[in-house]
Image (tube, rainbow, N blue to C red; front, side):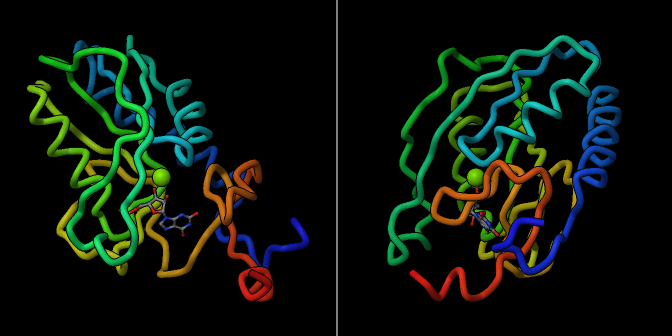
Length: 180
Ligand code: XMP
Ligand code: MG
């Protein structure tokens, strides 16, 4: 385990098993629909890369980068688009691929935005769901693991842009936060 980590929450093997399971279930649901999988940068990159290789239907992939406004305006649910999609999604079956849902603000904004572009359907797969953090009602169509209300890193998730490369998901030692 990395020296900055307090505990491993989800191991590399547990992630691999769950991602394969999600691929199987979601492939069956999207048979004949040629989904457009949209990864949310940067956190969803490892999950997206592993997940699409467990999908056995024809699909396309694209990415969006978004950032929430500061804490004071966060309750408005407005997010800033840093990178938009490359193509039109009109009539497409869109599957948003996300690392984690916490408050739900980011994804509820994205879902509304993409529905407004006349997608045929918009669904969400998130690796992690933290329901205790929710401030708006939002349920993922598919999720990997429900986690407690703790800040987690690894497998795409960062603290100050670090730890995204860890192959497992864990909780940082308190002193790492307290240093900065
Ligand atoms: P919402 O809008 O659902 O935002 O609150 C989800 C985004 O918040 C970040 N996030 C985390 N990042 N560990 C992280 O590294 C966490 O425990 C965590 N909880 C929320 C993340 O960027 C996610 O996309
Ligand atoms: Mg994210």
